[in-house]
Image (cartoon, rainbow, N blue to C red; front, side):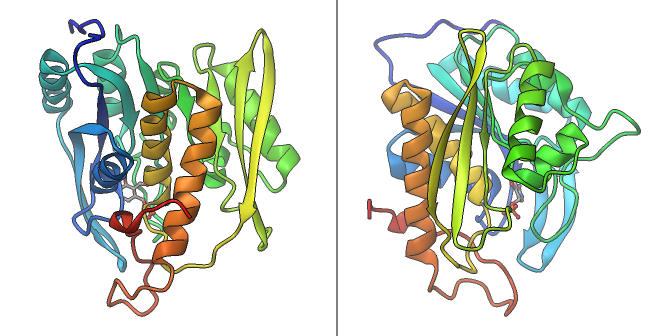
Length: 283
Ligand code: PLP
C-alpha cells in the first residue's frame, strides 16, 4: 500500500475507520459529527454495519478485509491523511487487515479498542484464544480504552486508580510501539468526579497526566467513547501536542454531555440516548 507523504499545501484529513450505528449516536456517525463540529475534515471507512438502537444491537455484519483495505487505499490515494482514528473493527481478521494497510503510515493513529456496547452486546468477535487485536495495538500511537476494555486487554480486574495505572503501564511495556494510553475513568465507582488519565512514554520513563472533572449525570451518553477519541484526534491536528489534545478533548466531552443531558432523544424509557454534537459550544 503506497502511503503518500504529508503535503504542506493540502488540508489535513482525519481518516476514521469504524462501524456504523444507524441511529447516529456512536461509531462512524459520532466520529463525523465530532470532527466536523471541532473543525476538521473527516474521511470515513466503514468496517461493520450494525443494526442497533438504545434497546440493543441486533445484527453485526463485518465487511470483508479486502473491501476495508480498498476503502483505506482510496482515501490515501487522494487525501492528505495526517491522522487515523480507529473504532469498532469487528474481529481479529479485520484488525490485522487495517494494521497491514497502515503499515507505512507515518502520522498519528488513535485506536479506541471497542469491545462491547453499553447495552451489553459483544462488538469485537473473539476467535478462540486470540482475543486481542495485538497487531493493531502495536501499530498505533494512542490507545483509548475505558476501564472494562482495559480489563479485557490485560486480563486483569481493575477496581482502583492504582490498578488502572498499573494495567496501563503493563500494556505500554508489552507493546513496544504503543506510545500512550488515554484511559477513560467514567466507569470508576466515584459518583462525584471522574478522573481521566493520559499515560505516556517519555525519555524511557512512563509519565502520567490527569484531568479531574465533575461527573455529569445524563441519560444521553451513548457514543462517548467514539466521540472522545475523535475529539482527541481532531485537537491533535490543531495543536500537534498530545497533552493539549487530551485536555481539550475532555473539555469538549464534558460540555457535550452537559448540553444534551436534559433532552428527550430516544423513545425507550430506560434507553441511553446519544450526544447532541450540533449543540457544542465552549462552556
Ligand atoms: N456501536 C458502534 C458502531 C460503535 O463504534 C460503538 C463504539 O464504542 C458502540 C456501538 C458502543 O457505543 P456505546 O458504548 O456508547 O454503547
